[in-house]
Image (cartoon, rainbow, N blue to C red; front, top):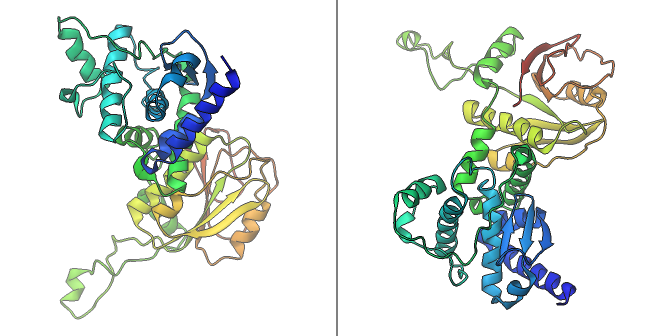
Amino acid sequence: MDTNHVKNEISYAKVRLFNQSNMVFTSSLCSMLETVLTDEVPYGATNGKQLLINPKTFVELTDSEQVFLLAHETLHVAYLHTLRKDDRDHQIFNMACDYVINLELVNQGMSMIQGGLLDRKYRGMSSEEVYDLLSKDNKPKPNNALGNDIIPSDKSATEEITSKIIQAVHQAQRSNNYGSVPDSVKRYIENLHKPKVNWKAVLKRFMLNAGKADYSWKKPRKKLLNQGFYLPSINSFGLGKVTFAIDTSGSVDDNMFSQFISEIHHVFKQLNPDSIDLMLFDTSVKVHKPINSINELNKVELVGCGGTDLTDTLEKYTKTNSKALIVITDGYFNTRLTNPKKPVLWVIFNNPRFTASFGKVIHFKLE
């Protein structure tokens, strides 16, 4: 068989997958998986890192079935099926995962490969829920044309697989196709990047101590209102203008950067600021712009990846009218820094030994 012909067929199928607007996430993740040709699988399989394709059976599929196969195997990766088997029966767990994925893809208008597993009674169920039902069912199990296409991964592969999933989510966000990300993947990423910082409490305390707090006019003090005075509530807190500087040096990987962005995401959710002044820096400031919404924040990309030097960051901060600078970093830099004579909050992840000659430091552990 002409290997180049097969590779071209796979490439064309990936393009067809990419051209479906509801498959931006899936096609992005698919493109990150190494494609390996092998005759040891009926059609395809995955170990979480690679996409295994049987060259002979792949070229016999219709165009739509080829796209289905790529999406099917990629969703096994997206749903971490190669990591979720635990001590379950391999064949039954594989069947359960296939029922979930096939139903999802068929509902999106894809053409399933003949002989694939499909049953609408499993609609809305997780793979584990379907597995439990299959395990209790004593009837003979149906044949699965796709076979055992899940190759369990070692737990040590979790970080690498998760990193690819996060990158695919970011790609969908940047192309305004976040809706193409499956709900279960969204929940997984949200749980993965729950805020480590209670921003409402931290910023309120920090800004008050710095003498830079704003009061909101949305909640009047009722006692004084009756006396003809309209004053802001002492308990209400407006963020005012602050600058967030995110470390994008070489020591910050995709997972850590996603956590940093997630922290600012929760600033928007908890404090609802009109805008946030954002800097991305390594040896210098690479990006400096206002962020006016969560949607704009979701499009921010990891840039830089060089060394770390905050000199330029602090200089630019002194020239802004921001009331405070919040630096989100792992704190691994040796530069001697000049105090900007304005409030600075160091949010340090995974570096308990970090100290600063100025500003306030808070430490957090990133799992």
